Image 1 (tube, helix red, strand yellow):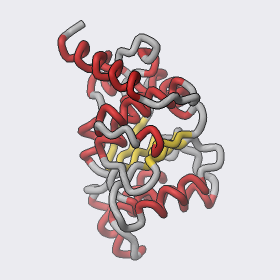
Image 2: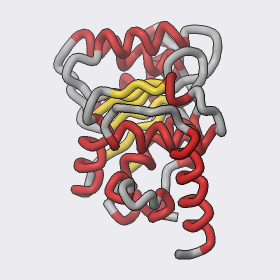
Image 3: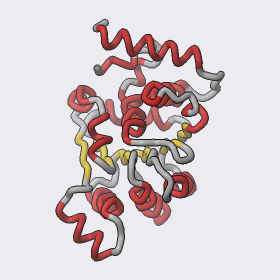
Image 4: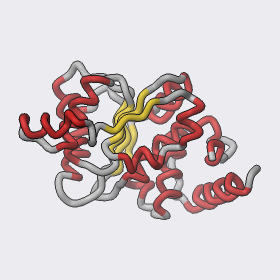
Length: 216
């Protein structure tokens, strides 16, 4: 293995040895390990929630090629494994700086993050939506899921902070229905954590071999 892959594999073996016993499926545990690796925070094991089988479903869909990922901010995009995106022909979009967003936000009386998600859902309703920064973006997605007629590949809800953050995650869980989701409970989260959950889905076929760096 290249040096970078060896270091990552060693880190993940250390994490696995320090985690509490966890009866959740391997796809969920693999994502939990990624969040711990990203944060060095073992509380992630308690804070990480995912619909059973969500990571596996995302892995299968992403590996099939041609999928779309929507992020709330460009920082989430920066954390996605570029080699994996290129290998599977995945398009990644962030609407926050789309020229239409400011007008929609003003006319509808909503935040730019909400407006960006509203446009994204209209144009890519079957995407994987990844929120690592803006709770209002997650609130918008939860509202659209609650209304029905919106069935994305999934939603990752990991905004961080103190205003609307916990509420946005509760609303996502309440509105998800059959949509696969992953959530970092409470106030913790962030762009890097949101991205690493996607990376866990990319590398799930390497989980048994404990090789998270297969796309490094």
